[in-house]
Length: 252
Image (cartoon, rainbow, N blue to C red; front, side, top):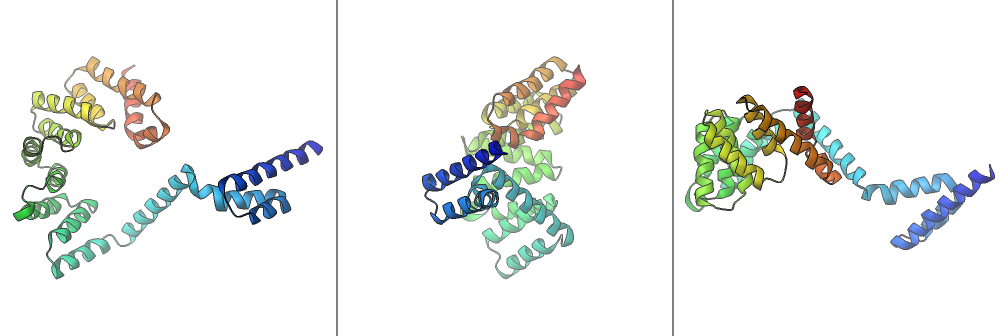
């Protein structure tokens, strides 16, 4: 018991030191020292926890769950709101907002139409709209359209999100059966992209083409690189890393 009491006192002093060092109000010290366990717990939950990475992750998870529940309960609510705004004011901004909502509502064909309608006047060469259009065309099972849009982007806006555009071009060419072009675009996407999606999709294409060794090498690269990467990178790329590990396990 004396050892436990000493440990509690040590923890209290650590929390009190944190109050002084971090510039929190001094009255926290009275709460921490006056209520040995509960005071420390309250201080942590109120002052420390909200600023931790775990708190941010938890907040994102809660928000994602709330958004998902809201969409399930009223799936067309946001879509109707964006449509009403566009009817009142058919501006490019409102068209873009509705197009983005169409993508979120799994209506990529409608989104592509809206994006195309925005490519007029001063927005006719806007790379942001063209990138969104290429993604919508790919999602709408229009790889030919996505290939044209992505190729135009690479030609007319050199250096603009090269990795993302090259990945769209690669996926479009793969869907069209144009394997040499797809391989070249995937290779460029792997060099320019910051995540693992391009490498994984490239490896999957090689595997489907019967090039097992090259595919396995790319899957292994994903796993090897992830093991040396920061925790944040591993979290954001978790789906691709897990998928690559599964592919390697199957190949054994």
